[in-house]
Image (cartoon, rainbow, N blue to C red; front, side, top):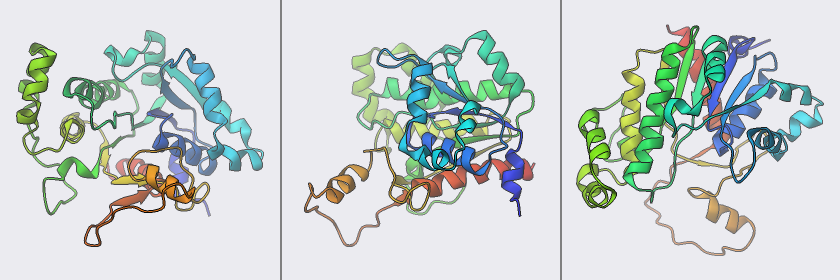
Length: 296
């Protein structure tokens, strides 16, 4: 029996930011493998380390996450992957007029996963990617002619200052216009010195800007939803138990422990370790888009 979620994706084209990242790669694999009748998957990519986006796309398909597709002789599905030159940190996402028109006319589902996860990055650069990048995605989606769903990947820690958190969007940690005016007018040294005051009770620029980004989604007037994973670890079941390409969060020392390099770690028995497998996150994202369209 075909699932309603699979049927929802049949023939629909998808736009994905952050497609070369840990979550993005797993999302692409799952969509191709479980929704083979899906339309094209447009992947926002930027040239990196002297490699053009066509080379990066080819590298992507060589990732071990796609081995199941290769074993099942489903590599023709890779033809659905279309690299689109761009960058969420650039004006108009760095898209050419032709590529932007293609997305506006053909895409129906958008997954926005691109973000900077560097907790040590300064407030200006984090704002450009996490907050303004999300604003640009919303602006693009407002132009898309037949948008069914925008799924925004946020973080469980945007509300880490609260002891009890519900599945609602809490008041913004700052007035976004006032905040962006500071970003535009202050020099780097002054902005860096004022960062602790601006962040208030937020732990770092990452959680602060990701919280503000949620309000960009809410205020966009779009069929949209927000998914807030906690610390993402290797796969639970799919495509291969334990699969990962990330060293972020706990995965660095988990990898070290599994290799026998890290032999002991300080832990606290009373702490709750908020880990979630990447395949659980990806399944949630895929179903979230379906739910947005179903509940309209």
